[in-house]
Length: 499
Image (cartoon, rainbow, N blue to C red; front, side):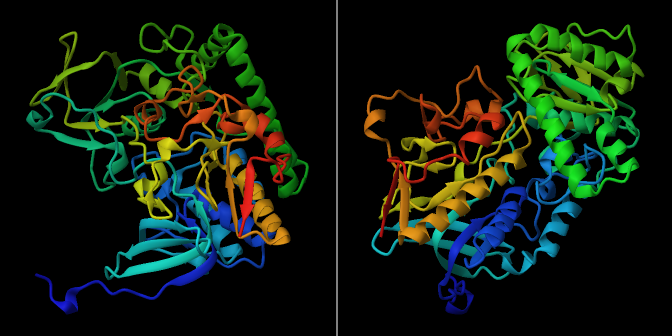
C-alpha cells in the first residue's frame, strides 16, 4: 500500500473563462483567435505532451512532411514563406513562431493529461480534472467554455490489424507512428504495409539508404504528383510583393483550384484519373505501368488524395528501388510475411503504415450533470457542437482541404458566440433540434460514399451522429462552410441560451 507521502498531490482548482484541450495545430490557432477577438477572456491550454505540435511532434518517421500545401495548411494570419509541402520540422518551427510572436506559451500547461470533464448546470461550469506527468499531481480546473482541440486519433496507440503469426517474425516490427529516429535502416530490406499518405512519405525516404523497399497494399491509392513549388508565389516574390499579400493571394488561388478539382472528381472522375496518370508519367516515364498496383477501386477523393512532391515514390519505383505488391497478408513468418496468394516477402524491418485508431474527444470520460456522456447518442451541429452538451465545441478539420482552414473558420465562430453570450448575459449555450427537425433522419457521422478512410469506418459507432439537413452534419466541404458558418444566425431556434 502506498504511503501518505507517495499519494499524488491535489492542487486547488484554477478557474479560467476558456479551457483549450491540446497544443497542436488546432489548439494554437484557436488560442490566437481567442486572444485577438475576445481579448478580455482568460484561458489556458492543457497539453498532454511535453511540447507543442500534436501530430507533428508525434510522428518522427523518415521524411515526415505535410500532405497539404502550407499556404492553406498554414494559418490565414501568418504567411507561409517556404515550399508548399513542408517537413514536420519546418511546421513545428512555424508553429513555434506563432506561439512566440503572440505570447501564447505563457498560457500552455505542458505534461497535463485530462482525465475527466464534468459539466454542472447548477453553476454553468465545466470541471476538468488532469494529471501532471512531472510529479503525478492531480489538478482541477474549472472553465465557462471548453474548446476541444485534441484531434481525432490516439497518439499513443496506432491501429495495427490482428495479423496472424506476427509473434513469429524475427526481424524488427514497428508502426510508423511509433518510429524511433535512432533506427539505422542503411542497407536493410524494408517492407512497408499500407499505401496512404504515411506510406507515400516514408517509402521514398527509406529508398535513399535501404537495400530495397517493398510496399504491400490491400488496394491502391490515388497520388497527385507535382513540383514542390508554387509558381504564383515565386513570381509575386520576384516582383517584390509583400508576404502577407502573397499569402492571401496564393491561398485564394490554391483554394479555387482545389474546389475545381473536387467538383471534377465528382463529375468526371475517369478524366481526372487520366490527368493524374499523366502527372505521374512526367516523373516515372511514359511507359510506367499503372495496372494493377496504381489503379484504385474507389472514386478519386473518396479517400484522401496523397500528394507526391516531385513524384518521388514513382521515381524510386521506376529506378527499381521500390517494388509494390497488391495483396492481403495470410501470415507473418520468421523472415517476413506470406501473402494470401502465397508470395513470400522477406524483410529486415517491417513498418506498419496502417493508419490511426480513432479517439473521440481524446477518449476522455465526460459527464453532464452527473450522467456519463455517450457521444454516439448526440447529434452534431455542423460537426462542432453537440445536442445536450453545453458550452463545448470540438475542432474537427477537413480531409479534402487543409485541416487548418476549419481551425480559422471555427475560431471565428466560437469568438462570435462567446461575445454574443456576453452581450445578452448568457452563461450557457447548447444546440437542440428544432420543431422542424422532429422527423429528421438520424444517420452515422459521415456517409461511406462521401469519405471512407478506415479509421472513420471502424469508429462510426463512437462518433456523434448527424441529421440529413446541412446544419446537422459535418459535410467536409470547406467551400460551402466558408460561407455558411460565418452567416450562421446564432439567435436561431437551434441555439438555447440560459443562465
